[in-house]
Image (cartoon, rainbow, N blue to C red; front, side):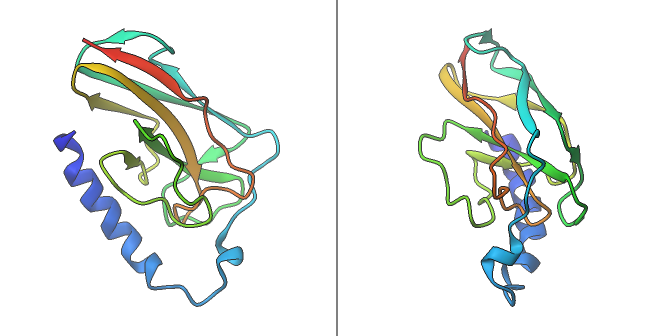
Amino acid sequence: MTAYRSMIFASALMLSPLLHAGEGTQANLISEAPADAKVYIISPKDGETVPQTFTVKFGLSGMGVAPAGVDKEKTGHHHLLIDVDEMPDMTKPLPATENIVHFGGGQTETELTLPPGKHTLQLVMGNHLHIPFKNPVMSKKITVVVE
């Protein structure tokens, strides 16, 4: 997962102005997603055995993808939760950690390297401020087995 440290640092840089901008109420910062919005993992499939380095492809319907910081209606960006058992506070910006990877550039896939064993993957859409939508747009959690 060390390959993601630079991505986590970049995500933290993008978040820092937002963390200091707290002039409005938190409720004003939470966006509404379209009712038909769905996010899902195209590949790998649930239960699939994968090599240590593999590609994760993100799917989205009912809304569009826009980079973090772009406040455009009916859009958001992906966050990949890796081995997360307890969901973070869904009313605040998702933290950038080794287990919560931000794709604030609008990416729709990533190459992931994980140690051997079972791992869970789940996508959560965030608005322009990395805050999950009022009506959360989350994928089903899948399990992969890393060789």
